Image (cartoon, rainbow, N blue to C red; front, side, top):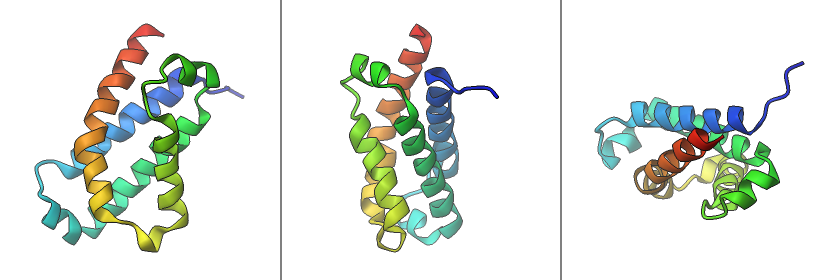
Length: 113
């Protein structure tokens, strides 16, 4: 069986971010709140990002300690365990403010490994 390594998990993160960007497009927050399918798709991909982060090696996380790995994994845990209490404003903020930076960071790491 093929053992997945850091490169594969980083690719999972990048692809999940790109899917979220595709789902969100140019919609505004109010429209996002009305689009249940989009919310579900975004949440699923945030889960994928968090799970992939949890599977990255300690060595990689230590080397790139400027990335908030623990916070990213924590968001996944909050979504999984408190689905009925998701704070959509926090999800929206993460999508708009944090994911673009994370995508850039992940692409940089992928170029170096």
